[in-house]
Image (tube, rainbow, N blue to C red):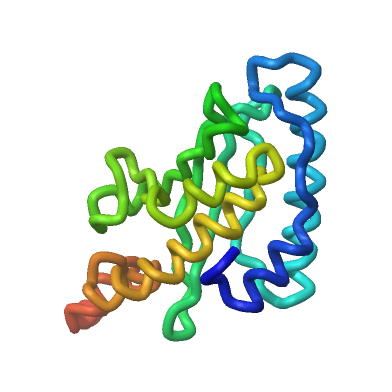
Length: 183
């Protein structure tokens, strides 16, 4: 994992590697793989909480574990920016990494495909291919989504493409209009 900083390498080293090569269509083997995925996600979440770096919530959106939804956030200039997160497990999983989607950011950056799928082609996909089937959802979040958020959110905020929820919630206050006086 050349090019990754010590902190990232340390965290990735604490996420358990997976061993079962199975996707959503593989019946019992997929259920065993899903157990490994949950163990890795729990370990990753625990590491993040221990390092005071909690930045996402995610869970399977269906009983088969083929669709996942949640929320991720990034703190920039002491303000927390939250984004809905979703993805489907590809049929060819784990040979093919999931395409992580942040639908509310769709069309706001060039480093995104239609539908809000974040661009991971250049840096992450070769790493995933090299580590198949040992990488799973937790690894995709750690080595794919986390660096993407760190690179893109500050640019989106500074350019005005993304506004903090407090700035969006009070447009009348921002325009300087005073409440009407009671007579």
